[in-house]
Length: 244
Image 1 (spheres, rainbow, N blue to C red):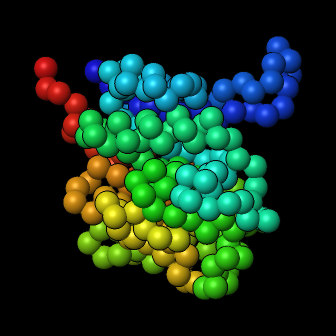
Image 2 (image 1 turned 90 degrees about the vertical axis):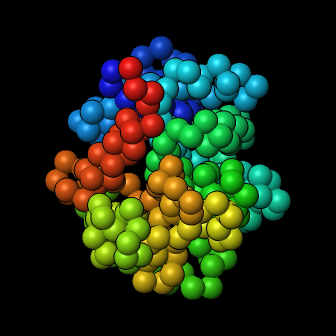
Image 3 (image 1 turned 60 degrees about the vertical axis):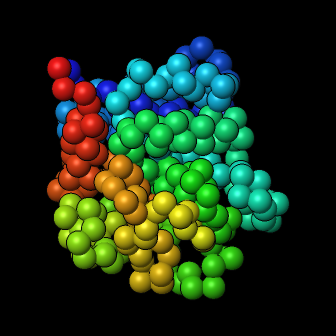
């Protein structure tokens, strides 16, 4: 059986062109394609009552937390900064509970952009609500270049899982204005931009979680290191599946 990968859905806050419905759930096509190309089977999960998350667990083998709106700062004990972007509390509540139950069930986890931030918050870390709060942030983290093109380098910790996939100095794309502040206790920083902004997190005690601040789904077709991030994720999921 192919590894089933849960993709918690984003929410379209405009009316669709097809059925004129607002707040439609969706998952980004590039992520779906990257998961399929590396051997996984995507399963899209709409945001529902967190109390029902346990019923989802048997339906998937691993979970990827993806990009989207800013994380609501009340989840890490702060009021909204003047430069906070759109938030969607319903999605945050659902995904934090999904994260906690997936961690407890030892399911492999990937985080992309907001997904990295959500994972850090869900496990007890905090964020800079806007990079203007971070005194070290100096380079452009929301690129004007096309999204499938890299825009800045990151330095990856030697010996980390990420280093085996991307090397120690990958050239990545970037479109975010929030960033990790205090790192959750269960996570370790394994990549940073040249201005010290956190660019990747991994589980401290295992290979369960790998999360990156950039968007490998937009680069996987033409950049081998981006494909390797997805391949590693699907492989980590498969390694945790029960043997028949």
